Length: 239
Image 1: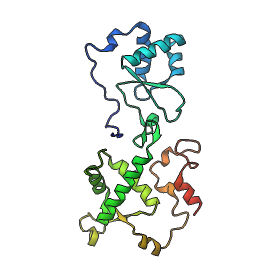
Image 2: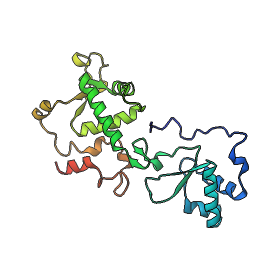
Image 3: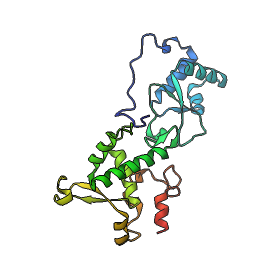
Image 4: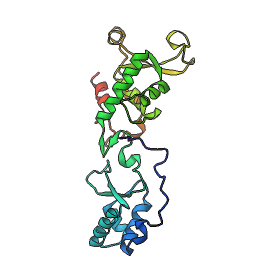
């Protein structure tokens, strides 16, 4: 079930002595070499045909043979879902192709994200104040949650909870509820509904979500991540 990429998506198995690669025809070998050379990016069929310089019928026949031999696989490119995209089976799609850990089979895994949000919120509510490391460890040890998540993923989830005013980011002063947390360390505090109603609202410019968005570097007007599709940006506009 895990959708988290390992330390290196380019790690490959050593070729077996009786590998299907040894039995490829000349045309299959040419096509396989083109596809394999693209590693975790893969290649679109039209680009593949241009680079291999083979007739369409030969390419189609060779693709079918390579798939039967389990040497290549078709993957979903989230930037162009309508295009047929192929990759050698030894590679896992890069984030640019798959969308990263938040995507499953080319679609944003909203159920996974929401489950993780609720778990993070409950863990912080239970502790009152928690560090990123504490939340990550508690999620990964949760019996009913069998997906390993990274600190970076949890931090992205916590940012969404901050934008939703479910939690707030604070720094430890080393005393009271922060006694077990080193002085100055960033941690997260649960915001009860009662407390939220009694606190002054931040100004619109101070609360712009772009300032704390972990995906801001990937945000473009017409991209996958865009102000047009961002629910937090729309909330800010409606402030």
